[in-house]
Length: 145
Length: 145
Image (tube, rainbow over the protein chains, first blue to last red):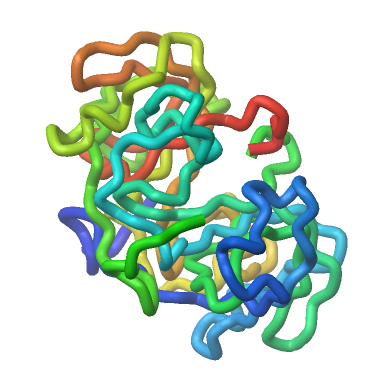
């Protein structure tokens, strides 16, 4: 693979929002813990600079939306899974807690429709205003993402 | 959910490496495009501050490692899929290209063994020195991540 000199080599860098979720879920207390647990569809509004990176996505596609869970607590390293105090404290890397050093959310969703700069996607459990940092297709031969 | 005032609210923030990949793959030209395409196992060395977040992970677990593909080109919005010039230019959000606005890599791997501050994981196709930004368990009831 030919590569130019990396512009951002050396370590993790600043994320840039490529879009934002517009959802009927307005606060965390309304959000199911996983999309499969009764979450609604939502709009993914793509930032103007990134709209051409959508080309090729169509209704019916299965995609992974990566969000930045902006209300999470980054200093948390252990939690009671699913906020159940009866469960023993567990390292956040062994859980899907939003509270973790880099609060990235992974959401496998279906593209319901594609507008000019928006995707209708779902089901997705994040709150309105959550920044989106990446979109990836589910690999056709690797159904495990 | 009770939440403290978010420390990093408002938008995507600076990522912090929680670890690094130590691999026999030393340059991008040696790396398969997907872990399933002949990639080796590698060590995931966890940063001292984050070691306690591993608690609960054991050999045999299926996890998703999220990396920061530090050699990627962030300005790229369209690519020929799988670097094949015969394929039409496609938006990077419809591909798994490492070149994209936020070059996050998703790698579903098996934990082979757990040492004090290291996980042996694989197969994984990233190059030696790639920063790791998150680790998540594959959800037991949702095999699709």
